[in-house]
Image 1: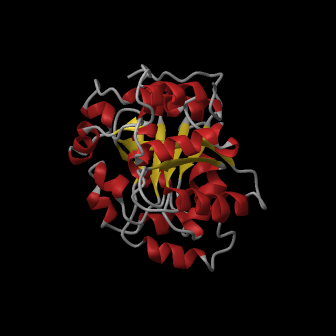
Image 2 (image 1 turned 90 degrees about the horizontal axis):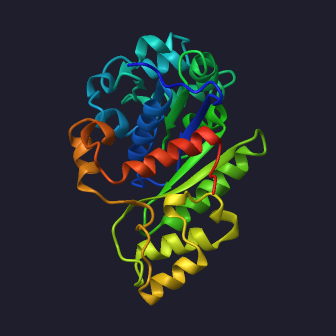
Length: 292
């Protein structure tokens, strides 16, 4: 397949991160990486989450349970390209491993402990080998999370409309973004409402999440266009006159079935109506932020 790399686009790495489990990090990371690969040529997806959902959902459990390649690359300076596996023609995966807790422990005593992912994977591979690098991160603070933020310096935060989303974004902002910004520039690229299924003209969790992020000045500029609702939109929703698309990434059976088939959504169901959302996420990464 011919690569569709645009020479005017700047190579960029991005972490998909929120300090709360079950918020769609792996689904977001997989499908964002796949859309970037479809649009730009070679992309690397790095799974640093110890639960291994990204690795499992792409069919690489054997790598998760084999030799600790993450330890070898981050701490022993092994060649990362010897440990990547091919997902599609233009998408590769650096899998997670079941002993990431050991890596976390060993990083604490390593020299330049927060710079290993950048030095050993992102810096040597971004640009020449891969157009973009997407990192799926742990849902807790630690050296692996620090490495992901320092190496990418760009962040996408997925949010699900369930109890705890506000604490998730508050903790992510306070314990990750604000703390990291004391030491290096870290850009929040997007807040991504995902797995939505409820009505907006009633008091539902979908409505509460969408209203909160669209109405708060400190959050609204990071909401993708597929989840953006203006004051006029809310008035139309409450009057029963709203005719636009339902905002956010909506729950679809094909998204879940794609995981069970060990494929990104595009490769499982190229007709799914939610692919446009992941395509816009890819554009946000390419542009370095949301463009209205």
